[in-house]
Image (cartoon, rainbow over all chains, first blue to last red; front, top):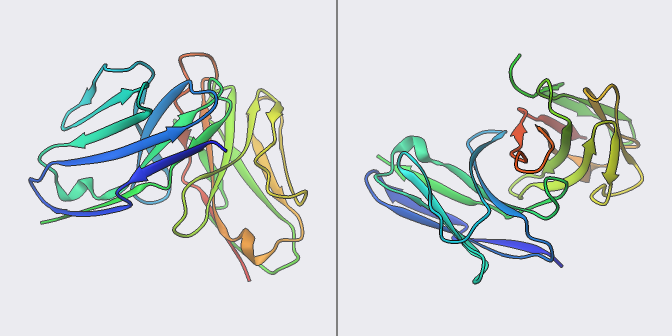
Length: 111
Length: 115
C-alpha cells in the first residue's frame, strides 16, 4: 500500500532556530512530491519537486528531493512565529490525478 | 474571485440527513479534487475530476458519497444518510490539470458536523 511518512509529527522551537522536516514515501508510481503549509483550513502550496538533488528555495524555506532514497526534506532557517503551521508532504502518483498525503508535521515557533 | 471558493463554510446536520457541499474552482482550472480532513488527521483523497468526468473514484469511502461536476466548473459533493464519522473538514482544490501544472490550490473548506 502506498504511503507517505513525515517526521517529526510535532516540533517546538524558538524564533531564530533552523528546522528540518522529513518526508519519506513508498509509492508505486511516483511523479512528483509537493510540500504545503496549512495554518488554518486550507493548505497553501510551497514547492513541487520532480528531480533529485535540485534544491528549490523560497526565502527562508528550501527543499530537496532524493528519489534514490525516497525522501525529501524541508528546511526553514531563522524561524519566525508566523512559520507555526502544519507542514504537509504529498506525492503525486499519476500526473495530478491521484495524490497521497502524509500526516503532516505540526511546527510551533515560540517567541 | 481569484481563488477556490466553497460553500457553506460550516454545516451542522443530524445523523441520517443528506448534505450537499459546493466547490467553485479557479476559472480555467480543468482539474478538481475533493479531500476530507478529520480532526487531527492528514488529508484523505476522495475524488478527482478532469473536466466533468471522474476517472478516479477510488477514494470515496462508501456508496453514500457521490460527486458531480457540471460545465467543467462547479462541483458538488453529496453525502447521503450522514453518519457521525462523516464529521470533518471537506476541502476542494483545483489545478490547471495538465502535465507540469499539477499544483493544487485549495479552497477554505467546509466544516461538517454530524450530530
